[in-house]
Image (cartoon, rainbow, N blue to C red):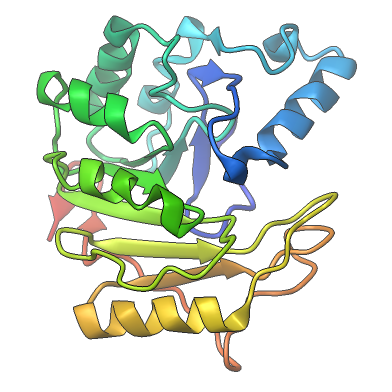
Length: 245
């Protein structure tokens, strides 16, 4: 957990929870699981439980100590809405994010039903962006759940993209990220799938961010699509103590 990261669409990661369990095919080659077991083998105390879901309440106030504004990916090593994370703890995380209003927090989940069920009891200031992961057309219902959430920015992470996604319901969606899988046993992404999503975003006026082609490592295939990078972001800027739209 740190104030620097190689993830292209964010500036830092913050993990008040680590560990997760698999819920769909996109989880098959989970990078966080591989990393957690590696850190456990190295004796990192945060990962003494390996990839079992573990709360880290001592990390809750970390963003309050980061004074320079940044985009923060919440739980890069877990899923905040995992069924074993207590609702009160999730609420605590959201209260910290609301208090640290000079940052943008990017929350991403595959557990869209639990997100929708808890959303009404959580604070949603404009610096909390909420997203869902969708790896194939079988999981489009996650987008419907996301659209019920009163976040200022709702986004999709289509990574690892495992199939075409025609007819994406982009109404009420403010950002789309696409990426191929990386690591051992990575599954191939088709350029046609990516182009179709890019074109759908263009028609809908939704910013499109292409993260990577994937391969043996995240950087193996680069991130050029049709000769250029695609780094679309929501039309939200942030200053030290306020968000500007």
